[in-house]
Image (cartoon, rainbow, N blue to C red):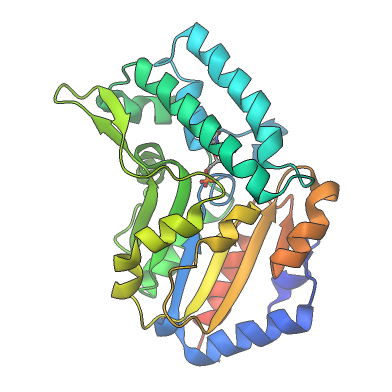
Length: 289
Ligand SMILES: Nc1ccn([C@@H]2O[C@H](COP(=O)(O)O)[C@@H](O)[C@H]2O)c(=O)n1
């Protein structure tokens, strides 16, 4: 049905179940579909030529807008908390307060740096941020078929929007839920707006944004893309969900985390830096045959 499902990066717990979901979504038609995707390490690459690519936070952390001393402090936070974020031996309940601690400390440090809004464009341009291979097809296809894309990110909204803008794919069918910066009248960062979104509270974020799901309430079929087990709750605000196909990018600590990803995601893409599989599924879902 979809040859790309035989790619070496593809793992499935229940291939027949995946086929059934895809067939049901195809039968219902593109007008019933919405896509909900995480951003960092899902729409962006985890690594390129053996080198880690930055998250939207890291784009700022590593930039010329941050003092050397602050860069060290942000790196220490990353080294302390990232292993906790991806630790398969800890429960989400254990991780929750630690994630709040990480994001809060990092955001406090960023605010102290008095970051200028007008320089975000420059630091994104100078960064190593990269969207996954064949990302253009993904964004263009969704736009062409009027399929809404919700990007639900615990990263920094202003930065991720700039990444999309510079790649020329920040299209009108895209809506973003993320952590947005609050600038003073001189354009200097003074705080972060609204409720904090971190890896493991996306369910709360989804429920707070009920208005978005209300607007597209006739789209009961979901293609969900994520890279963490926390991303699985991104669709919790969807009305009368009929079918959901969950695609998970497994980028790091692959052998240790594979069993839990296979249990939670319908399709697991192991160390796959491309959008080829989601693109092939979307092509099928929007085809008339
Ligand atoms: N100070 C921080 C906090 C988080 N991160 C990483 O960003 C990712 C969150 O963004 P999503 O688009 O994936 O929701 C998360 O996985 C953290 O590892 C960071 O780099 N710095």
